[in-house]
Length: 121
Image (cartoon, rainbow, N blue to C red; front, side, top):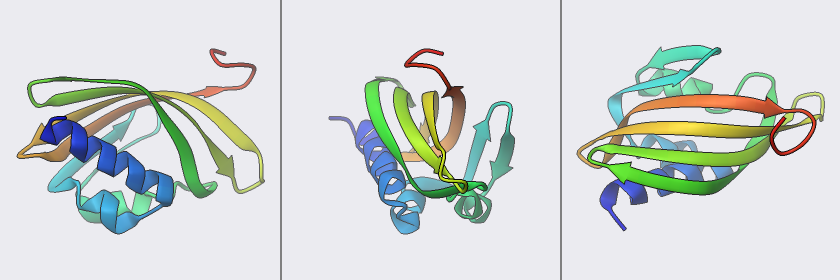
């Protein structure tokens, strides 16, 4: 397993446990995080502040469907769920692009689609 894939797996494991320290250890200081349609932020402090996700409680459940690597880019397809503050569980499908630098995540580009009916809609 490559160093980049290992870093992304460690990062995702940190999200599953809501372990801020583990997550942040996988990032460059100038990390950029974009969730298309929702937000864009830069820097570890802004990232740390956004980890818990406004309107959600507890860590998300995340499952890697597949992960591929080309050069310094790792792409992952994920499925998962997150619990809203109201107690409602949001099912989701995600595509993630991780741009790596020296074995750390320098940019995360995410597309998160809420699934309301089944595994694809």
